[in-house]
Image 1 (tube, one colour):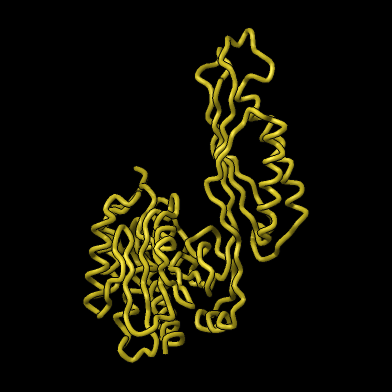
Image 2: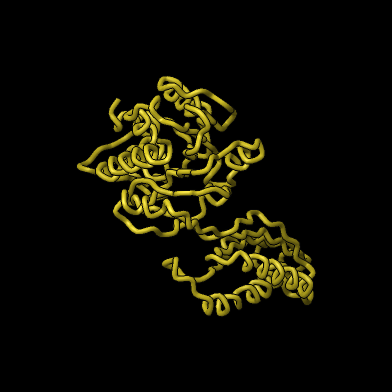
Length: 351
């Protein structure tokens, strides 16, 4: 099977928000069984292995983000135009999955001294429920893990941390001509967020040169409150996120800062949606990754399932990085380069 056919098969399965999860899990299981893998765990996730004492795991999420009406090409069918391979998930991350499956089929797996484990997950784009399920099931991710996110074949050996809040501000609904002091939930939210934004000045004093954006950042994702212009709102909800460069202590600092603010603004409640520490690997094998990719190590641009692991993690997949974009695509040359890199990693670690 040509790699274009393999990638087309994966793209034709619509896994936006895991809608056809079972279909893609069954497809992957059948493919891997045909080359000798055995199923170890199957739910909305799939874990399979081959060989003795697996030392390397491949981790890939099968879900994709939604598709707008602005696509030029059919999103759920591979379209080839020159060297470009278009389709939802080509970059994030069915391209990486296809490259690993294709690499496996090009190797004599019986000659490997150590085994391989593959772990396919769901819900990576929203809540990371798939990788959390595998961790709860105590799946062994082996000494080394390879995560096929799009990196344009740069060996990414770290990523920022993430701290996300859902904030709920309470107030009292009255006519806007007779507002009650401190009882507008929107006003309380604005005052609270102004205090949060003061952290920007502090963050920018603490640089971390590993990243293009070399300091912690704040994002006020959504603000929802009120029903009309003539009524003071009684409830406002805010989604607030922080990206943390390298120091896990910054997460503790931010949490303490917000706890102190809630004492100053008692009409706010919160829950933490995600708390993920930054990581940065320093294993000696990274020099090998740089050699075979002919690119220098760097951190990953976002948070991935690698952030939930504690072993030697490498994030590497084809490019360019067009994740979540309209007319998402990768280059065939980059995809084939990924295949060769994956083959060398398997041969080095497993033999």
